[in-house]
Image: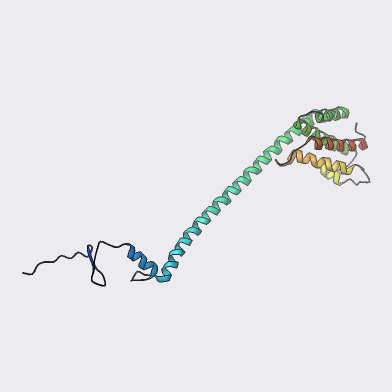
Length: 210
């Protein structure tokens, strides 16, 4: 009787030269697919296919990252707008309180209040002095008969021939707008505050406010 020979292809594999290889080689099929040898090979097309797959994954991740950045930008913009509106509301409320308290008082008392505030060392008092002076200017122009829905519109309706200190009024009003609505980069220095009040007072002198 001939001897029985058991051959397990999972254990013994025959190479081209007849030499048996023990075990299963998992690297050879991958190399064959990448560099082209055997039925699974893709040759150069296999390499480019692999790189194309990597690029597709990168593109998807890049789109996701860009969408996340866009969302964060929109969210931050909305929140900044809300904070700016809140700050404007607080400043408008402060102006309203001052307006209710001092608008009906004697002019000389209101101007004296401006001078008192600008003489302190507190920047918040300087801001209040400028806001108060702007209210006095607005009232004075109304009484002088200049029309407009706001101080800015009244100033635009005035010519330099009508008001020689018109440029002072404009420059002072611009500083007031920065104080009330300016961004966080704006810093009101003592020099700027004092110069602004001097501009208001030159206008007041011409309008007869004392």
